[in-house]
Amino acid sequence: MIVTAHGKLNLSLDVLGRGDDGYHALRSVMHTVAFGDDVQVELTSDGSFTIDPGQSYLPADGRNLAVKAARLFLEGTGLGADIRITKRIPVCAGMGGGSADAAAVLRALNALTGRNMTAEELSGLGAQVGSDVPFCVAEGSALAEGRGEQLTALPSLPRCSIVLCKPAFSISTPELFARIDRRRSRLHPDTAGLMAALEAGDLAGVARRCFNVFEDVLGGRGSDIAAIKSLLTDMGALGAAMTGSGSTVFGLFASEDDAKDAWEALSGQHQECWLTRPWSGGQA
View 1 (spheres, helix red, strand yellow):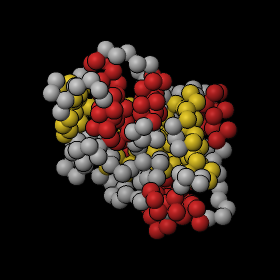
View 2 (view 1 turned 180 degrees about the horizontal axis):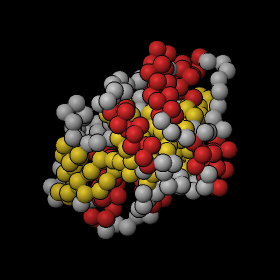
View 3 (view 1 turned 180 degrees about the vertical axis):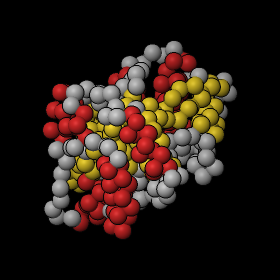
View 4 (view 1 turned 90 degrees about the vertical axis):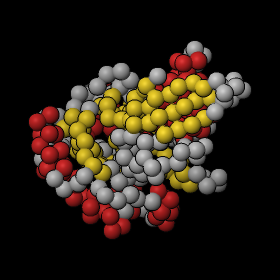
Protein backbone atom coordinates (compact mmCIF):
# COMPACT_ATOMS: atom_id res chain seq x y z
CA MET A 1 0.00 0.00 0.00
CA ILE A 2 1.20 3.50 -0.83
CA VAL A 3 0.01 6.35 1.43
CA THR A 4 0.75 10.06 1.16
CA ALA A 5 2.37 11.60 4.23
CA HIS A 6 1.20 15.21 4.16
CA GLY A 7 3.41 17.96 5.54
CA LYS A 8 2.14 20.29 8.25
CA LEU A 9 2.27 24.02 8.87
CA ASN A 10 2.10 25.86 12.16
CA LEU A 11 -0.19 28.77 11.30
CA SER A 12 0.59 29.98 14.80
CA LEU A 13 3.02 28.67 17.37
CA ASP A 14 3.31 29.76 21.00
CA VAL A 15 5.53 28.39 23.79
CA LEU A 16 3.72 28.75 27.11
CA GLY A 17 6.51 27.63 29.42
CA ARG A 18 8.69 24.76 30.52
CA GLY A 19 7.42 22.16 32.96
CA ASP A 20 9.29 20.35 35.73
CA ASP A 21 9.66 17.37 33.38
CA GLY A 22 11.77 19.50 31.04
CA TYR A 23 9.17 19.57 28.26
CA HIS A 24 7.71 22.80 26.92
CA ALA A 25 3.97 23.43 26.79
CA LEU A 26 2.93 24.52 23.32
CA ARG A 27 -0.17 26.08 21.79
CA SER A 28 -0.33 25.95 18.03
CA VAL A 29 -2.87 26.06 15.23
CA MET A 30 -1.71 23.43 12.75
CA HIS A 31 -2.82 22.57 9.22
CA THR A 32 -1.79 19.91 6.72
CA VAL A 33 -0.90 20.71 3.12
CA ALA A 34 -1.34 18.73 -0.09
CA PHE A 35 2.45 18.50 -0.49
CA GLY A 36 4.06 15.41 1.04
CA ASP A 37 6.04 12.16 0.89
CA ASP A 38 4.89 8.85 -0.62
CA VAL A 39 5.19 6.00 1.88
CA GLN A 40 5.01 2.41 0.60
CA VAL A 41 4.34 -0.24 3.24
CA GLU A 42 4.40 -4.02 2.75
CA LEU A 43 3.80 -6.61 5.47
CA THR A 44 6.50 -9.24 6.02
CA SER A 45 5.71 -12.61 7.53
CA ASP A 46 9.13 -13.15 9.12
CA GLY A 47 8.82 -10.26 11.57
CA SER A 48 11.61 -8.22 9.97
CA PHE A 49 11.55 -4.43 9.69
CA THR A 50 13.40 -2.69 6.86
CA ILE A 51 13.25 0.87 5.57
CA ASP A 52 14.51 2.89 2.64
CA PRO A 53 14.18 6.41 4.11
CA GLY A 54 14.48 8.17 0.77
CA GLN A 55 17.64 10.09 1.65
CA SER A 56 21.05 8.62 2.45
CA TYR A 57 21.55 10.82 5.52
CA LEU A 58 18.32 9.71 7.22
CA PRO A 59 18.37 6.78 9.69
CA ALA A 60 17.59 3.44 8.04
CA ASP A 61 17.05 1.53 11.27
CA GLY A 62 14.97 1.61 14.47
CA ARG A 63 15.79 5.29 15.05
CA ASN A 64 13.52 6.23 12.16
CA LEU A 65 10.05 7.27 13.39
CA ALA A 66 8.40 5.25 10.61
CA VAL A 67 10.08 2.08 11.89
CA LYS A 68 9.17 2.94 15.48
CA ALA A 69 5.53 3.33 14.44
CA ALA A 70 5.55 0.01 12.56
CA ARG A 71 7.13 -1.88 15.47
CA LEU A 72 4.60 -0.42 17.88
CA PHE A 73 1.59 -1.22 15.69
CA LEU A 74 2.70 -4.79 14.92
CA GLU A 75 3.95 -5.63 18.41
CA GLY A 76 2.95 -9.17 19.36
CA THR A 77 1.68 -10.12 15.89
CA GLY A 78 4.82 -11.81 14.57
CA LEU A 79 4.58 -9.64 11.46
CA GLY A 80 7.07 -7.08 10.20
CA ALA A 81 7.07 -4.35 7.58
CA ASP A 82 9.12 -3.23 4.60
CA ILE A 83 8.89 0.58 4.29
CA ARG A 84 10.01 2.67 1.31
CA ILE A 85 9.73 6.45 1.37
CA THR A 86 9.81 8.82 -1.59
CA LYS A 87 10.97 11.94 0.22
CA ARG A 88 9.65 15.38 -0.73
CA ILE A 89 9.05 17.09 2.62
CA PRO A 90 12.30 18.90 3.47
CA VAL A 91 14.27 17.48 6.39
CA CYS A 92 14.76 19.49 9.62
CA ALA A 93 12.48 22.15 8.18
CA GLY A 94 9.57 22.51 10.62
CA MET A 95 7.08 20.63 8.43
CA GLY A 96 6.91 17.42 10.46
CA GLY A 97 8.23 15.12 7.74
CA GLY A 98 9.33 12.30 10.05
CA SER A 99 6.09 12.48 12.02
CA ALA A 100 4.03 12.49 8.81
CA ASP A 101 5.85 9.38 7.58
CA ALA A 102 5.19 7.61 10.89
CA ALA A 103 1.50 8.55 10.71
CA ALA A 104 1.28 7.27 7.13
CA VAL A 105 2.76 3.94 8.26
CA LEU A 106 0.14 3.64 11.01
CA ARG A 107 -2.69 4.34 8.55
CA ALA A 108 -1.31 1.85 6.04
CA LEU A 109 -0.81 -0.92 8.59
CA ASN A 110 -4.30 -0.32 9.97
CA ALA A 111 -5.70 -1.01 6.50
CA LEU A 112 -3.34 -3.86 5.59
CA THR A 113 -4.00 -5.80 8.79
CA GLY A 114 -7.73 -5.12 8.82
CA ARG A 115 -7.51 -4.06 12.44
CA ASN A 116 -9.79 -1.07 11.79
CA MET A 117 -8.55 1.04 14.68
CA THR A 118 -10.29 4.39 15.05
CA ALA A 119 -8.50 7.66 14.35
CA GLU A 120 -8.40 8.29 18.09
CA GLU A 121 -6.79 4.89 18.73
CA LEU A 122 -4.21 5.48 16.00
CA SER A 123 -3.47 8.92 17.42
CA GLY A 124 -2.93 7.33 20.83
CA LEU A 125 -0.33 5.00 19.31
CA GLY A 126 1.19 7.92 17.46
CA ALA A 127 1.67 9.87 20.69
CA GLN A 128 4.04 7.12 21.83
CA VAL A 129 6.16 7.70 18.72
CA GLY A 130 6.36 11.51 18.65
CA SER A 131 4.45 14.62 19.70
CA ASP A 132 3.45 15.64 16.15
CA VAL A 133 2.38 12.16 15.05
CA PRO A 134 -1.20 12.37 16.45
CA PHE A 135 -1.86 15.50 14.40
CA CYS A 136 -0.33 13.91 11.30
CA VAL A 137 -2.66 10.92 11.81
CA ALA A 138 -5.71 13.19 12.09
CA GLU A 139 -4.69 15.67 9.35
CA GLY A 140 -6.77 18.72 8.51
CA SER A 141 -6.75 21.59 10.99
CA ALA A 142 -6.46 21.54 14.77
CA LEU A 143 -5.40 23.41 17.88
CA ALA A 144 -2.48 21.44 19.32
CA GLU A 145 -1.65 21.85 23.01
CA GLY A 146 0.53 20.16 25.63
CA ARG A 147 3.56 18.79 23.81
CA GLY A 148 1.47 18.96 20.64
CA GLU A 149 -0.48 15.75 21.21
CA GLN A 150 -3.65 17.33 22.70
CA LEU A 151 -5.81 18.11 19.68
CA THR A 152 -9.00 20.08 19.17
CA ALA A 153 -10.35 19.92 15.61
CA LEU A 154 -10.83 23.24 13.82
CA PRO A 155 -12.39 24.29 10.50
CA SER A 156 -10.07 24.05 7.53
CA LEU A 157 -8.48 26.98 5.76
CA PRO A 158 -10.60 28.52 3.01
CA ARG A 159 -9.45 27.67 -0.48
CA CYS A 160 -6.09 29.31 -1.11
CA SER A 161 -2.63 28.79 -2.54
CA ILE A 162 0.42 28.28 -0.35
CA VAL A 163 4.03 28.98 -1.26
CA LEU A 164 6.70 27.12 0.73
CA CYS A 165 10.36 28.10 0.79
CA LYS A 166 13.15 26.43 2.75
CA PRO A 167 16.41 28.38 2.76
CA ALA A 168 19.64 26.40 2.57
CA PHE A 169 20.09 26.01 6.31
CA SER A 170 18.40 24.29 9.23
CA ILE A 171 17.84 25.68 12.71
CA SER A 172 18.62 23.94 16.02
CA THR A 173 15.36 23.26 17.83
CA PRO A 174 17.00 22.79 21.28
CA GLU A 175 18.84 26.09 20.85
CA LEU A 176 15.61 27.93 20.00
CA PHE A 177 13.89 26.52 23.08
CA ALA A 178 16.89 27.56 25.18
CA ARG A 179 16.65 31.10 23.81
CA ILE A 180 12.91 31.17 24.53
CA ASP A 181 13.61 30.11 28.12
CA ARG A 182 16.10 32.94 28.56
CA ARG A 183 13.77 35.60 27.17
CA ARG A 184 11.61 37.17 29.86
CA SER A 185 9.15 38.98 27.61
CA ARG A 186 8.06 38.26 24.06
CA LEU A 187 5.24 38.67 21.62
CA HIS A 188 2.52 36.01 21.45
CA PRO A 189 0.28 35.03 18.54
CA ASP A 190 -3.41 35.92 18.61
CA THR A 191 -4.41 32.27 18.71
CA ALA A 192 -8.01 32.95 19.71
CA GLY A 193 -8.39 35.48 16.91
CA LEU A 194 -6.89 33.07 14.39
CA MET A 195 -9.31 30.31 15.43
CA ALA A 196 -12.24 32.75 15.17
CA ALA A 197 -11.11 33.70 11.66
CA LEU A 198 -11.04 30.01 10.70
CA GLU A 199 -14.55 29.61 12.07
CA ALA A 200 -15.65 32.58 9.96
CA GLY A 201 -13.89 31.33 6.81
CA ASP A 202 -11.89 34.57 6.80
CA LEU A 203 -8.63 33.84 4.96
CA ALA A 204 -7.28 37.37 5.37
CA GLY A 205 -8.07 37.26 9.08
CA VAL A 206 -6.18 33.99 9.45
CA ALA A 207 -3.23 35.18 7.39
CA ARG A 208 -2.61 38.40 9.28
CA ARG A 209 -2.55 36.46 12.56
CA CYS A 210 0.03 33.89 11.44
CA PHE A 211 2.91 34.21 13.89
CA ASN A 212 5.62 31.97 15.32
CA VAL A 213 7.33 32.94 18.59
CA PHE A 214 10.55 31.28 17.45
CA GLU A 215 10.98 34.05 14.88
CA ASP A 216 11.80 36.42 17.76
CA VAL A 217 14.84 34.36 18.82
CA LEU A 218 16.41 33.35 15.51
CA GLY A 219 19.55 35.39 15.96
CA GLY A 220 21.59 35.89 12.78
CA ARG A 221 19.26 33.77 10.67
CA GLY A 222 16.35 36.09 11.40
CA SER A 223 17.26 38.39 8.54
CA ASP A 224 17.14 35.48 6.04
CA ILE A 225 13.68 34.43 7.24
CA ALA A 226 12.49 38.05 7.22
CA ALA A 227 13.70 38.50 3.63
CA ILE A 228 11.64 35.52 2.42
CA LYS A 229 8.57 36.75 4.31
CA SER A 230 9.02 40.23 2.85
CA LEU A 231 9.19 38.91 -0.72
CA LEU A 232 6.08 36.82 -0.17
CA THR A 233 4.03 39.70 1.20
CA ASP A 234 5.37 42.12 -1.43
CA MET A 235 4.13 39.71 -4.10
CA GLY A 236 0.63 39.38 -2.70
CA ALA A 237 0.70 36.99 0.26
CA LEU A 238 -1.98 37.89 2.79
CA GLY A 239 0.38 36.69 5.53
CA ALA A 240 3.62 34.77 5.96
CA ALA A 241 5.42 33.03 8.81
CA MET A 242 8.00 30.38 9.64
CA THR A 243 6.62 26.94 10.48
CA GLY A 244 7.74 24.89 13.48
CA SER A 245 11.32 25.53 14.49
CA GLY A 246 12.12 26.36 10.87
CA SER A 247 13.56 27.00 8.57
CA THR A 248 10.66 26.67 6.08
CA VAL A 249 8.62 29.83 5.51
CA PHE A 250 5.09 29.79 4.08
CA GLY A 251 2.87 32.43 2.52
CA LEU A 252 -0.92 32.29 2.14
CA PHE A 253 -2.34 33.65 -1.13
CA ALA A 254 -5.92 34.30 -2.21
CA SER A 255 -4.71 34.58 -5.83
CA GLU A 256 -3.23 31.51 -7.50
CA ASP A 257 -1.53 33.72 -10.09
CA ASP A 258 0.18 35.80 -7.38
CA ALA A 259 1.28 32.59 -5.66
CA LYS A 260 2.81 31.26 -8.88
CA ASP A 261 4.67 34.54 -9.42
CA ALA A 262 6.03 34.45 -5.85
CA TRP A 263 7.03 30.80 -6.21
CA GLU A 264 8.91 31.57 -9.41
CA ALA A 265 10.68 34.55 -7.82
CA LEU A 266 11.76 32.55 -4.77
CA SER A 267 12.80 29.59 -6.91
CA GLY A 268 15.34 31.86 -8.53
CA GLN A 269 16.93 32.48 -5.13
CA HIS A 270 16.38 29.21 -3.23
CA GLN A 271 16.64 25.59 -4.32
CA GLU A 272 13.75 24.24 -2.23
CA CYS A 273 10.47 25.99 -3.05
CA TRP A 274 7.01 24.55 -3.63
CA LEU A 275 3.51 25.63 -4.56
CA THR A 276 0.69 23.77 -2.80
CA ARG A 277 -2.76 24.01 -1.20
CA PRO A 278 -4.31 23.21 2.18
CA TRP A 279 -5.16 19.56 2.75
CA SER A 280 -8.17 18.59 4.83
CA GLY A 281 -8.19 14.82 5.05
CA GLY A 282 -9.32 14.01 1.54
CA GLN A 283 -9.63 17.32 -0.24
CA ALA A 284 -7.31 20.14 -1.27
